[in-house]
Length: 181
Image 1 (cartoon, one colour):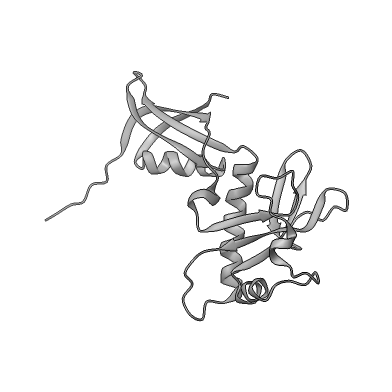
Image 2 (cartoon, one colour):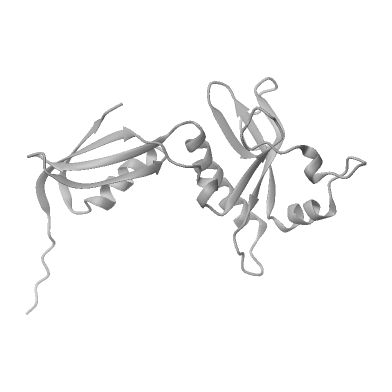
């Protein structure tokens, strides 16, 4: 008879969370953010996607229709929030409607629905917004005796810290999380 026994890690660990610098997810992801305000680092002039008469270029219109490009609303008030147009904060003073766009570089299967592409864009924008607001972290794990166990940096979004610790110590029962910031 073969009896399976689940391993439970009863060692005590300390996971220290710190701020971390990391590059924009647009640098290594499958998307690009373009904004029309020269204050932002992702600025490109509106002229890049319009004709001399002020209409959108046929190429840009085709990307919009295909779900490769989506308009952005950009909300700025102490922090910044990038959302698909019409979905974020709609404040007449702090929101720039169609203040830019997100361009997706994913290879979509034929027949991929527009809603699926929008969901991918929303996920990318969530991560990009977290990065733009400085929500980037590293985690270092030591045992109770102070011995190094593991570390990882470049975690974007505080909500990902707990998932990262769990991935690093999947069977651990006793993990103390300390914030060093």
